Structure formats: C-alpha cells, structure tokens
Length: 318
Length: 277
Figure 1 (cartoon, rainbow over the protein chains, first blue to last red):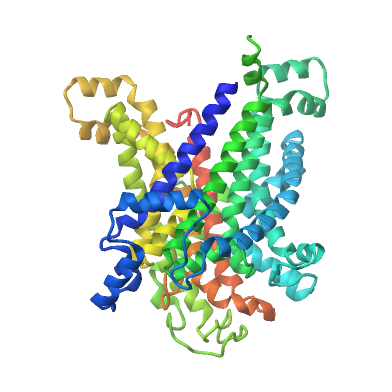
Figure 2: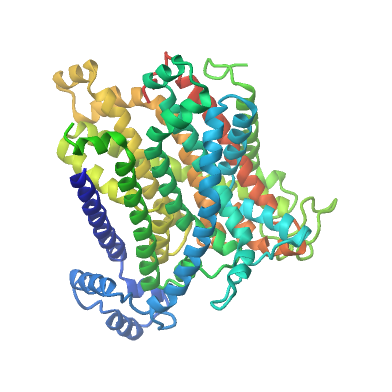
C-alpha cells in the first residue's frame, strides 16, 4: 500500500509539472506572439518592440519557461502587466478569501449531502428519495447565477436578511464575515450538494447489490443496520472521492459566484485578468487553480486507498 | 405518437416540447420578436407591461425580444460547439482504438493531463490570449470538450473493436478509415447520442457562464448569459430582469436532460447495443 501511495503522489507531482508546461505553452500557440496579441492592431512597431523586450520574448521559449517555473517554485509569480504590481501579493489575500468561501460552503455541504445521500439510499424509492432526486436534478440543470439571483431576490431584496453584495475587508470580524458571505456560501452549497448527494446515493446503492449485502439481509438484519455497518465502510472510498472532487469543483465553481456577489476572491481576479488580457496574472491564477484541483484529487485518491479495507490488507501479507 | 419507433414518456414529451419551443424561437426570431435585437425602445429597467411583456434591460432594450434573438446565438453556439467537439472527439477516440497502442498511449495521456485541470481554467487562459470572438469561443470549448468525448468514444469502440466482424473486416484487408467508419462507428452510435445531449447541456451552460463573465458572446449580440450580466444590477431594486434569461437557460437544459433521460432508458433495455455502458 505504501508503494501505491508514493506512486499516487509522484503521479500528482508529474501532472502538476505537465500542467505548468501546458499553461506556459498555451501562450506560445498564438499565431503572432503575446506582445502583438495583447497590444492589438493599433500598436506601432516601436511600442511592439519595446513590449517584446519587456516580456523577454527575444529569448527562446524553454529558457523563459524555466525562469517562470523556477520563479513560481520560489514564490515569485511575476508582475501584472497592467498595474505592475507583484502578482503574489495581489493573489495571497484573494486566495485566502476564496478558500474562506469554499471552506464555509464545504462545511455545510459535506455533512448535509452525505447525510441526505445515505438517507435517500436507505429509503430508496420512497418519497424522501424522490424529493431528493428531483430537487438535486433541478439544481444541477440550472446555471449557477440563476440560483444566486433567486436567492438574492428573496433573501436580500424582499426580506433584507442578508446583504446582496459580499464585500469583505481584511480586518473584518469573523462573525460579520460569515454573515456577509452567507448568500454566496449557500449558493455554492446548493450547487455541490446536489452532485455529492446523487453520487453518495448511487455509490451506496451500487454496494447494495453485492452478494454479502444480500447475506446480511438474509441473516434478518434491518435495512438501516445493513447500510450503516455493511455497505457504508465499503462505499466510503467512492464517497470520499466524490467529496474531494466536489471540493475541487467548489474552488473553481466559485468564479461565477464571486462575480455575482462581487466577492474579492481569486476568481474575480482571474476574470479581470482575462478581460484586460493580463497574461502573467491569468497564468498565475490558472496555475493556482490547477494546483488546488490536482492536490485535492490526489488527496482524494490517497484517502480512498487508506480507507479501502481490501487495499489495506494487501500490506499485511494476505 | 412514436418517435423512431419508441413511445416517449410524459417527461420526454415535456422535454421535446421545451426544446422545440426554443428551436422555433431561434429559427424564426426576426418574425416572432416584437422589437429589434439591439434596439433601445423603453426606459432603463422598465417594468413589465402590455407593451414590454418582460420589461426592459439596462439600456432600455426589450427583454422578451432579446431572449428570442438570444435563443439563436446561445443555442447556435452551443450546438456548433458540441457537433465540432463530437467530430474531433469521436475521430480521435476511434483512432486510438484502431491505430494501435502507440497512438492510443499518446492520445490517452494527453487527454489525462487535459482532464486533470478544470475546463474553465483552461478556457480562461486561452480566451485571455485570443480574445473572445464567436469562432475562438467555439473552437476553444470544442477542443477542450472533445477530451471528454474522446474518453467515451474510446471506451465504447474498445468494446466493439474486439468483436469478430471487425476482425473479419481487418483480415479482409479493409483500410483503417473504412473500418472506423463502416464497422465501429455505426455500432458505437447509440450510447454516443445520449452523450451528445449531455455534452450539449454542458457546453450550453459553459457558453452561458462565460458570457455571464463577459468573456463569451460579445454585445450587441443578444445571448442569455450576457443578458443576465447586463441586467444583473436590476436585482437589487427587486426587479426580476436577470431572472428571465437565466430561467430560459435553466428551462433549455432541463428540457434536453429530460430527452436524454428518455433516450438512456431506451438504450438501457436489453436489446440496446449499449447495455454494457
């Protein structure tokens, strides 16, 4: 099992490395080069040449990649093209904000969705299962901003329980911060809960068709006990994988939600960067998002390996 | 009534009705819409009235007309993207199966890397360089999405490629392209059709999402995601302006999903070629 874990971690690192190449190489695919793409048609040859020099485009691509990559490893993400600020300094507080929002949503979403998923599986075919099924299908099919605006209209405009804009400051009290971010967090929760609930339900039900579950039923155990004692431990690995995948989705799905609620997070920063065609910012944000995604997926796999009783046994020489 | 020899269920009928409704809107937009696409006809954020059924948007355009015109761009772009992504993905998937282990390894590893980071991040990086015009938008999403199609096409044709009749065709001396087109593709189609619906939904939501972020279809063209963005501020005055286009997006996705569910339930029957999918 130890070897399996090491392989997984190495694989994760390799993927990260490959992604960094891909993100960098994307800028090299341009028909002209970055300078002419960013400055557009109206640029004079002189400004173009000066901009190329500033970007270091006179040197070969692999050298620029190595510089960029070693810079990233040392925590230097470069400077923004538009306002010349250090990107790391701009990203750090925004990354914190995004993680805060995603974490807030995850804290509500994970217990609720796993609980409801198991509940739906226990009551398969009964009304609670059907309601969960229909509601989660509906939330999956609608765009994020639809849910967000409906919540704003109802909770912020009609009833004025929550603010419609999630403006946070660094020195805000924790409780105020929770209050202000409540609506975006609820929106995110609804989004991921639907996915997690459905996948939890189906992975529990997939286990339920196994022979040893039938055996447990034939022993005369009640359904709830069979699920809690026999099915759940085996369904844990897929459920954990689903949770991690959805947490990864949370961090990215946050982009649209941040724009709706004007929340100062990474997503807004990246979208701003794209609008202004600020490539270093976009690359840095892309790399951070991708890393978060890959790290969460790797953690999911590792937990999956640790939790799976069959994989654990292989180590004890069975 | 039957469609392709199968009787649609009630929910399938609802789906078919919704999708047909939007398609008719899209095709006959200039004849149905009461006002022009980019015409300022009323007050900013005017309330809904007999004149403007759904009210006006941020610069006084008629929301209903823009939703009708928006059906064209939003559904059109998503549809073209999905068709393109399926063409690329299916050809690559079949190539991986028929073309031997080296091609398979190269394509599969590349797709693995592409799948390991979220589409949105990739799309944002590409759009930041190329800017967002409709052709770039379509190409970007199609190529990114084709990685998902590749996975399925490869898995489905893997199962078919080992069957006797494919072997026979190869022994007969048929070329690679012929085997792909005549032996594998027709048998891989049933599961791919329902996947087409799902990928369409995904691309549709994706285009709408990008437009909402201001990075998709650009004004003055009407499109549902962009309309939500335009009227977003109206929500704080308690006006439902951004909800109408958002609701159109939601309805369309639900409609397609209902049809896909029905197709899946047909395929799940024992006679379906996709029973093992």
